[in-house]
Length: 252
Length: 122
Image 1 (cartoon, each protein chain N blue to C red):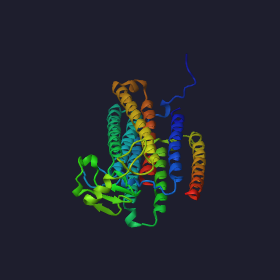
Image 2 (image 1 turned 90 degrees about the vertical axis):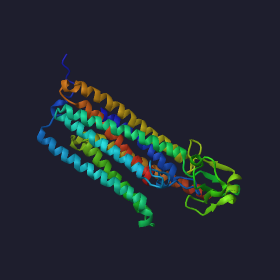
Image 3 (image 1 turned 120 degrees about the vertical axis):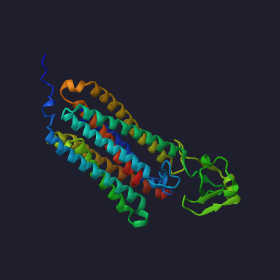
Image 4 (image 1 turned 30 degrees about the horizontal axis):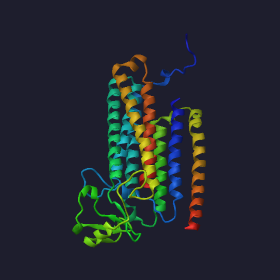
């Protein structure tokens, strides 16, 4: 039965990813889809740019927690209660780490790093420093780049004047607009990673409940650890979905 | 009342200490493989500009193929679908694969068409 559930859930996720691909492929001419390694380039504790490193770490954590889950199932086959408890506990910890990392990723995404400025003459510019981090902006050290985050640089009070007269400034991302690209980019990001994050969260809760039942010895009395295996299938599925989200959202 | 509609799970649920060692070796192999593939993907994603500026198209296809390899290992080994009976495997995988191939095909086809139509007016 769990396989029927997993296939239907897989269809939901493929529907989401295919519609993401559809939106991206049919994009209005003249608009550009953001590049993953330019958007996700922060790592806690490193002030410079660390493209994709954090999301790579998240992926690694999820894969490893998948591995500990297989080891828990394997220990269950040998009726090794201690082994099951150990590996299942590590799986729960890995899942919690992943959910926490996703919170950081979202915070960084919503917060933004280069606010997008629409200048009075219609050109687009990006700030060098995020004003949310710097607090009050100083015209003397003000800098922005034209066209893209790697574009021509403008500095000093003159550039600041242009910024002050700008028609519109977009900070970070929300459901209406974002500094990275088309609005649908942020919408898909929130929906797909949010939906996946909720799956991870429920997976952690399920694993935790199963862990308590294992500790209480419910499955040992029952004579088999089938429930660990079923929770494990769900957990691997969550990992499987993340492999695809990782590829299509961050890499391609 | 004795129920006869429940498939007895515990019959093929256990294995010996000996078999456990073989299985753990296989798990270790798959773990290393998945980690290596992920690192290669990230490296390609970060450095492709410097290595091969003109072949982003091929990098994309490399990503997709590597992802499918990873997915195969997760489903067949971690979710042990590879060890199930062949009929079960086909019932789960074939309808899904067929539907998804169609869905991706039609989405790419239609979105290309929409993009080109918009292109004529802008």
